[in-house]
Each structure stands twice: as C-alpha cells, then as structure tokens.
Length: 72
Image (cartoon, rainbow, N blue to C red):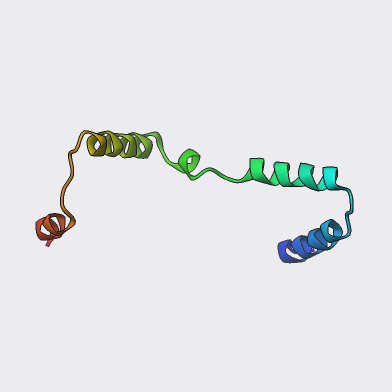
C-alpha cells in the first residue's frame, strides 16, 4: 500500500472513532511529531539568524531600498 492510500485509510479510521479522549491523544501525538524548521537548520544557520535578530533588536537595520541598491 502506498503512502497516499495509507493516509486515506487512516482518515477513514479516525472519522469512525467516537471516543473524544482517543481523538485528543491522536491530535497530541501528531502535534508532537511535527518537524520544527529550526531543528532542521545547521548550527551555523541558527547562529546567523540569532545574530541578525540581535542586530535588529539593537536598531541595526538597513532600509530595503538601500539594500537593493547595494546588491544591484
């Protein structure tokens, strides 16, 4: 069975469940399994983003139009 067929079968099963507690558990499980994009970044990428946020918080900004002039 391919992944799409498996998903459809799973949805059918879930639609027939009447137990609220069980549905809550399934929902919690799915939420926990979602991938956090931050964890997918390399340490270097995370550090660069954090550096950029710190600079923005300190007021170090570049106007978008100035940025476009610099790169063109």
